[in-house]
Structure formats: C-alpha cells, structure tokens
Image 1 (tube, rainbow, N blue to C red):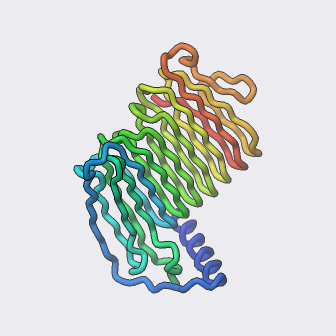
Image 2: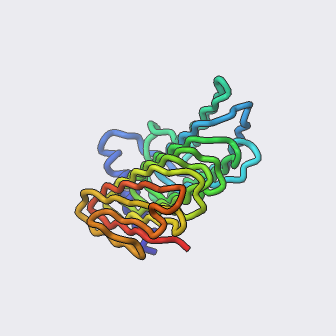
Length: 261
C-alpha cells in the first residue's frame, strides 16, 4: 500500500509541475500490449540504451533474438520507440519512451516494459530511469559494462559475474540494490553514487572485495566485513585472483554493505 501511495503522489506532482511548465496533458485510454523482436543482424557486439521516464521496467536474459520485448501502456502517444542499426558488425540498440508528448491528466497510468535480451552477444548496457520500479536481472547476459542512472523509485540490479568489468550506478531519490554475488571471472571496477534513499550492495564472499566510501551525510552499515576507516574488505581480499574494487560516493541516505551466501 505504501508503494501505491508513493507512486500516486509522485504522479500527481510530476503532472502538476509539467502542466505548469506548459506541457500538454494526455488522456489515458484502453490498455494496449505491443510485442517487438529485434534480430542480431550479424552484430558481434552491441551497445544498448534503455531510456524510460516513468513506469515499470523488467530486463532479463533468454531472448532467442537480440531482444524480445513486450510493451503495455494506456497512453496512446507513449508507445515506446525502438531503433536498431549495425555498422562494422557492431550493433546499436535504443529503446526509448517518447519525451515530448506531454503527461497524463490522471494517475491511473499503466506503463510497463518487459525486455528480454540475448545471453550470448557481448553487450554494453546503459539504463536511464525516471520514476517507477525497475528490476534488472542481468545475470545470464554477456555484459561487459553497465551504467544505470535512476530517479525516484526502487531499482534492483543483479549483474553477470562471468563477464562484467565496469559498473557505474547513480541513485536518485529512491532505493537501489545491486547484487554482485557470484563466481567472478574478471576484475571489476565499480563506481556507485548514493542518493536520498538506501543503497544496498550485496557482495561475494569468495572473491576479493574492497569498498571505499567517501563523502555523504548518511550512515554506512557493513555486515561481516573488515573495516579500516572508510575502507571495507572481505576475508578473500588480497587472496583471490580476481578483485572487485568499488568506490561509493555516499549521498544523504544509507549505504548497506552485506555479503551474499
């Protein structure tokens, strides 16, 4: 119930602010569901950009093509825009919510994306998110880099330990959980910028981890980690062949560091 109230309040505030700014108010209508498939088309690697202003986002693996997508919405002009091109065997995929079509005149908005991506194609993924709920279960993908910028809402991210080498995450006014647990094959460099809410990092036990927390007005809670000032390490740090180096710039919210199973 708290989540429903939060989103309803946020929707009213966003609609009011944009209406004052002169944006057109949109009518909601019948709920539509569109499915779309994007083929790999010979690409040997792909850069994917996911741009969603507000709504519910699900990203996972298991696509038979490059992407199998299902979009559900009840604002006609918010039909997502999908673009894909290949040049020199490198693909560029963009999935974007129209940004200049106004805001709905009600909070009874349904806007959901379910994106399934190919497990095997090496990919760089960027997700820029506004208000809403996002679940990015990326563990089966062949991601080499991941960048997530979040606004308001809850974001859950699970990353692929088999391939990821670079991670950037920026929180907004909501909560973010990043699951880094797994059997890591490569070193990882991660930069996390905290926001107003709670940033939770779930860390592996058997791969060396070093987390440095800088700045911020909020608290840091660390569970089963070694603490030296603002540096947190697990028992595997300095012993394993692979190391996760994580920098956290704290916001005014809470930073939680915990070891996985």
